[in-house]
Image (cartoon, rainbow, N blue to C red; front, side, top):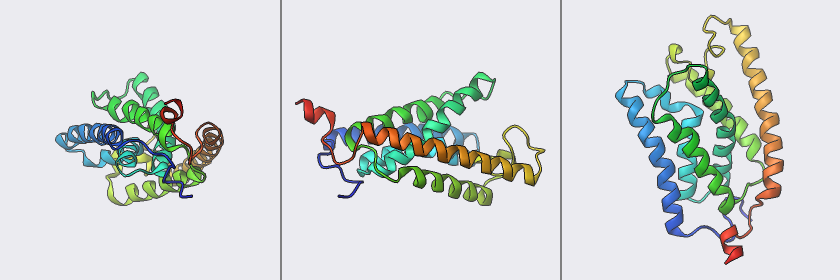
Length: 197
């Protein structure tokens, strides 16, 4: 059975509702950044995760939703910490970080959590980091592609060590999150609303 296609999926109306919510949250945040002349910031993994979970609802994909959820499990707490530390508050930021997380969690109940999402999420982050290094400004440091967070003076060696440590931490977190979530939300099972009806 294809992990991307649950046996009993959500209704078309429900898919549309949640899908447009995810895409809409990303679109609102994108409009802010484009208005500020900062298109590169649309590539932060948290923002893309919100877009991906919306697309996972519109074009049912358990795998895409799971990858988006794993990215947000890492990114949303870091965003909260950044705000608490006095970071730049943007009124649309909760839409992608918290709203996206809600949309992705809702997807668990209808799509389940497929096997192999953890390593796909990890590879996706690595490839996104490489992409950002190619096409985004150094000063923006999108997805930490150029320097240690809040330490732009970090050396190349320090930065590579930092990225390796982050990748290792994400690998462990993603792996154990998948093991836990697969027990609670197996793919190919009827969604909870179908079981209770």
